[in-house]
Image (cartoon, rainbow, N blue to C red; front, side, top):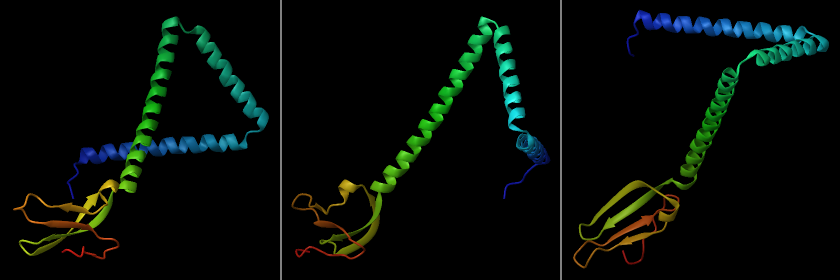
Length: 156
């Protein structure tokens, strides 16, 4: 376990305290909202809307542009986060669907060795692959093992 110095510990404690305070304030706000009647709720919302209108009436063109620019930037960031999440999910799904561990049986006739190994193959590589380099090279059969059972060609 990594050592933690007292300063880091204090920072964590402060952050935890801030989060606890925010959570408490949010809970109080929810409790107040549960207790208020529909008329009080409508009144509160109309007061908030009125304040927003007053603030917008007082702001200059530069302030308005700045506010709208911030809104656009925030929306872009949200969309990018959503797209990034979707891309991550699509990539995970793509590989989960197409990349499956397969057991391969490799027989090399000239050396008389049998090697069993596991490889990851894509869906288009799921077929039996035969490799026979030149006349001098070893003859190898790479077989896809269906459900762990090795069925060799008759020629091996």
